[in-house]
Image 1 (tube, rainbow, N blue to C red):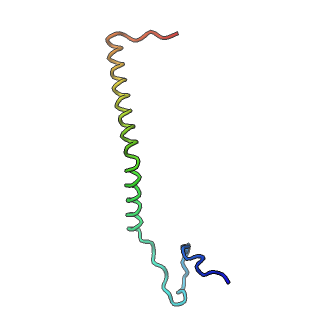
Image 2: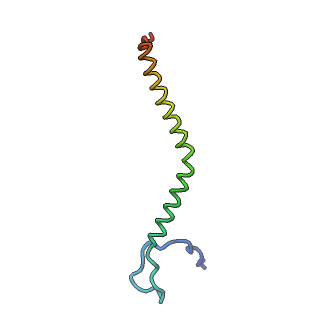
Image 3: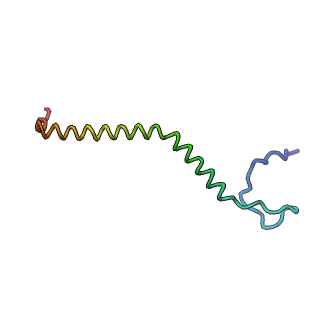
Length: 84
């Protein structure tokens, strides 16, 4: 005999157009709950990635500093000769 518990966690992909043995149709999706769950997941992802974003920002600032200092040094000492 086939187990009836086999598909208990399986969601119904389409709803029947008639009553199912006296039971009402399943409820439509709760879009507010889906939105809240998605926002919660985005906050969790943001919290995980924030240290990496800080590191990237620090590298960007250092790069800007070195570019500005190279421009000042080139202005004071002239551009460096090409290396052969």
